[in-house]
Image: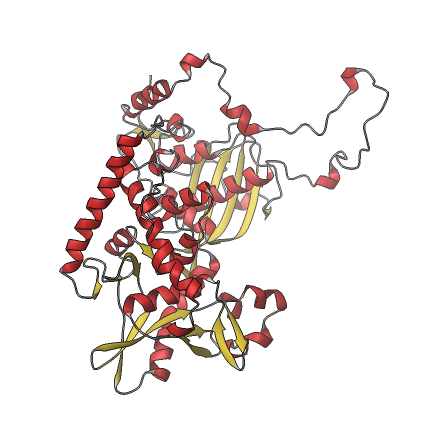
Length: 509
């Protein structure tokens, strides 16, 4: 019989873990074996579902949200954890670390988690933050997910490979066979995924309907189960005959007609209503319906089916989590500083710098952009601004980038110098981004701003210098892709169901 239980806030009982952290011997992680049966299901059960390891519990129907689980994943990918140490006693394995408070790296919280050595289950978690009343805050979640990632990539044993039996340079196979009991076949690959997904049942019991019925029965329960972390609803693939393809074509044509009728009501260049503020919910929602300037290069380079699936999954359906790398976080933090520095040094008295949201142009209904800013003179937009804060130039002078960067860094850099002038590389995503923005705003130039804490580099990108190939990719190739692939997927919704992409071959321009 199932029990609905919730862990109490008590962490001092003997069942909760060791009596005191001070009596334990801590060493820099990894110094001990991680519990062998620890897995992501234990984390999910501790943060979201029921928990039975602690004997000091009370009945309660209250639950917790999955927000700490999501935020914890972001903290791990953004390198928020540092000073990680582990310890253990006869019954428990402990791990402690410092975790930055949200995105403010000026403050850290001490986090400690306790695992059962035998079962691998999470016994409790403690954090100094105010939200950690039950030990289930985002910082505890981050440390648990950090440990799970390390366990998945390196295993539970911290023994160095040089301390294990030799597994390399064993020589060729012997010509004379020996007893089979003494034979070892080291070249046979162990495939845990294949073994884990193997279904020994007869084919008639492996149908999608059986799995879906099982999941639906699980969803009737008030509390989630670990099976729901392993299984997902499956959809049978459906093939489109010619009559169905004709219906999809008619849907796209009606979409184009309705779009044209809406564009008639707008100015030639207009701001999308509801997306005036960058990074707002409305801004994210509206930009998913169009090919944005920052994704123009990626969209124009799609060839394989998997690349197209991943693009639509990330941009149209927004099913892929947005990972915030250290370089991206550095750019976001310093963009305002770069904008203020540019306004102070490069805006003339008769000019005005304006921050904008999502913009479109009636000539290009498949495109949208969110410039970092525009410069107006007497109310007329004269140029657009694109700001970049490359982490590779964090403590270097961007005006001297060709001398302070290594050869490999210059090869990966987005700009090059010719005749004492700086240009964007023709095939770089930034070149496509700037070209798309200038086409939408119908301006002849863009001020490309490169900021570092040392100095500011500003060089102009002329629309007339953009190659014809890039312009055709943006105006023709992307438009063809938009109506043959993007909009049909909007109606068919195959990607969210894990079905192969359907692509038309009807619209040529």
